[in-house]
Amino acid sequence: MAMAPILLGHRGARAVHSVPENTIVSFDLALEHGCDGVEFDLRLTGCGRALVCHNAKVGKITVAAQLPANYFTCPG
Image (tube, rainbow, N blue to C red; front, side):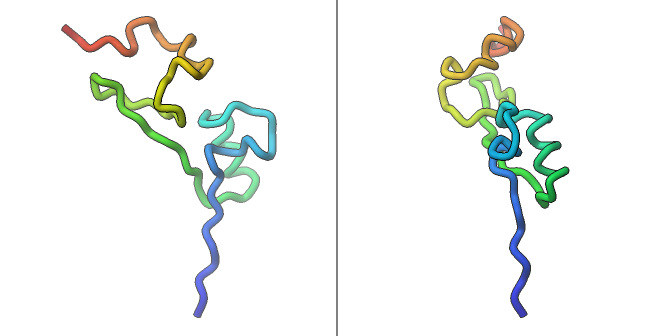
């Protein structure tokens, strides 16, 4: 008996709507459009903080400017 494929939204539903990938909005839209789940890249900062981001270098993404100034600073 063949199993039904699992449909995952790659970084959310960016292909369906003009929303930023890897955002809650994009993940919600993927689920609303019938996806069984979402796929995303999770990276850790040097301090061990989680960041949902495809690019290894966050300077290439616009969201980096929206993070708190000390987000990537390790506690002393």
